[in-house]
Amino acid sequence: MDMRYTKIFGVILAGIMFTLFCSPLYCARDNTPKLAAIVIKTFGKVEYREYDKNKWGTLTESTLLNQGDTIKTGKQSKVMLSFINGIDVKLGESSEMSIDLTKFGHITEGNSVSLTSGRAWMKLSRKQTGFEIHTPLVKVTLTGAEIETLVSPKGKTEVLVFYGKVELQNEHGKQELNRDMQSQVVKGKPPSVPQPVVVEQKRKWYDDDKAESQLMLLNVKPDLYVNESVLLSVQAMTLAGSIDKTYTDKVFVTVIPDKCKFSTDDGLTWKDSLALALYKGQAQFLVKPIEEGKYSVSVAGKDLRSDSAVIKPWYPPIKELLMKIRKQDGTEKEVKLRFSR
Image (cartoon, rainbow, N blue to C red; front, side):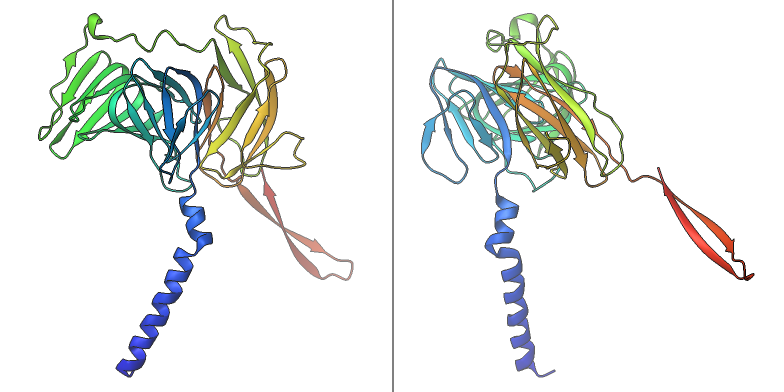
């Protein structure tokens, strides 16, 4: 092929690829921030900056936070968050934290934050995995853990583990921490050898603002077939273990990855997510997975500890039966029957 035409063809191909992958439609789908958390309580001066904006605003209770948003607290201030994937986070005074943007539709969506300075307490259920905290000096990965992370103005990071498993890793090395262990990271060094956490070191600044109630997600099938719907119920529970019938606020139901549908009208209409009003502390909804895989369904609401559950839909087995039918004229016809479930 003539070199001139080869260059022309290359330019045309590059233009097509640019148009396809950088069109507003494509980029909006890939970069649109997703719902990540709800603000449960604030104390003192707490501000936030929305994704792709420069202006800071006052953060108030019930505010919905998206991936890419940044939160900062003033002196003698703190904020309590509930992530849609069931993780509780409290940010202490003089702290700044961003909710990281993650790959669109990925199972780890909303599972990563960057703590620039200050202190943060985080609690996962004992079955949750993969939550990450990024500080200027180290990546902290949590597995079913409750921890406190402190970051100094110069980046020095201290991690205290109260239960669960935690991994600290940077370019110089890594360490694994278990229950009642701590480690610290300074510039140019690997995480220090784990040391025991003594009672006096357990900081209780996060214990005086516990939510009075917690959400409970019930009747979840761990395994179900793709395109089969299952009825779930969500309840606001008091610490005594009874339904909080005084709770009537909305709770937010989400799923990661977002390849499930929700319905509150017996399957007449389906939505990608729900803002569900509780009646006397409870409500029901349908969830229907549309692809095979692993999904995390979560509920979060104001003044409530969040809850989540994992479902693993799969395609039903299909069996075929070959049947021969003999007609009255003596000819035969084969019929293939397919059975599923």
